[in-house]
Image (cartoon, rainbow, N blue to C red; front, top):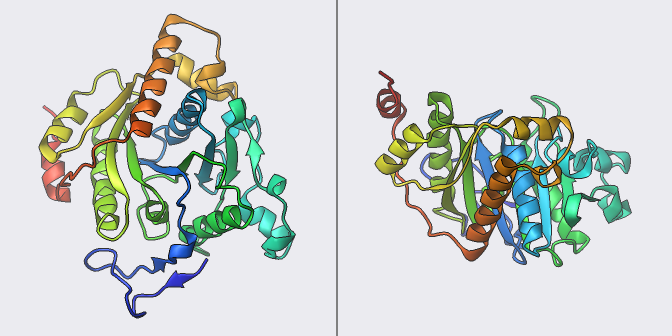
Length: 298
């Protein structure tokens, strides 16, 4: 991945105080709609991403999901396996990417969803942005993005350092998965800041949030009203969703039930909404102290 440093002529900063490098335009994804899914660690981003990928495929779209977590478990409900990561596969050929074949790192999942696990460097030894960059570069070298309609980046936890914000350099829209609680909304507020910083120099725009694992959405809606956010979908805390992970299945493969049908329909509506194009949000995140006070519960 070629990077443009900040002292290179024409380079731009990624927001006030940023010391991040810039992505080479040659590594941009231009042939597909790209969505980056963020949220607090453990909030259900992989479950959301995988089922959203299937929903897009049910709408007739050619979908590629890229997991950006060293655990490489983003796509296991789609493929029924822990796929090897791009970094692991590159290591086997001493990082000579020309020796790889697409089937070495791209795996077909349920309903034709193509799956890639970018992985990550060992803890404390590297940058997640490098891993994402190498993954996109490899996909482009093998022309795998040319036959893709939708790319979904499932991004690790609530880390918004330059490395893990790198999918925002590729994305058209960023989506935040949250729950109706203090920690999740607090994390969402910080992620909004990262997205808005990247939006100054890249095409990415904030699409809104997805309420997940929540019976109610009152605190999410209150935050949204105060900051200019929008709720795109709501998925309650249902046992069938928990069981789908244990069975290594997407929700579209589980035995039918009325509550499951409602969740499937919500995913299909979310996919249709994102494909049609959401209005870019100009949400204004709160300062940490302000949101701490704002989310005080009686």
